[in-house]
Length: 289
Image (cartoon, rainbow, N blue to C red; front, top):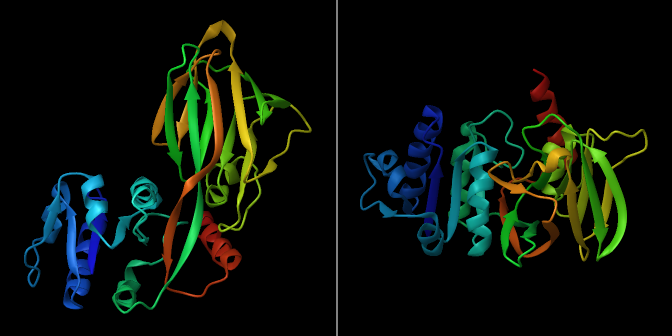
């Protein structure tokens, strides 16, 4: 079995944890592969012929399973490639909360269960986000957690118009709006007052960000829906579309944003039979401490 290890090298704890994981899985007969930029973590006694690839696409093409070592940001970045190449992945949390991570550093020996096939796989819904310009040009993005439409540098509220399958349904006077997956319901949307959604459900969550209204609430849409949004901001200044907090795109009043369920799914490996809501409560308690 070829196991790709993706590590946040900015965290010393992540590097040492990745070294231990590589040692453990190699000892179980797995072939460890990684990116060239991460190759330093593989200089460990007992690991020979560490396979290195130049980019994420090549790495995920050539692995059977991916293991990320870092926080939720490391998982989200890698998840787009895992979904593209239909590869299961699992996260080891060395960040603060690790909502999407399955394993804590003290439990990395449990990763041996992957080699033995002692795991299950959850399928997580993703979003296809498209920006179409007035001249017909467009860009497409894949969102694991959310797509946020928000005001840019100007501290001004924006008007956002939302349509469902080309029929106008609502208008928001707000700092912005969020289109979230069920997985993303525990991310930015939760902080904006949105509901928690079981991660394997199939729906699109729309949550306003600081709406200038007493009645604006989150809305759930069926997974077969296609939502469209346009924005209007004072002085024709651009708004910002942010995909998972990683990619920021300037949006003008003539641009049309569309959001729908992606045909791709993220496969997350689970090793434990845990109650999602109990786990969530534990994570939120950690945030308070």
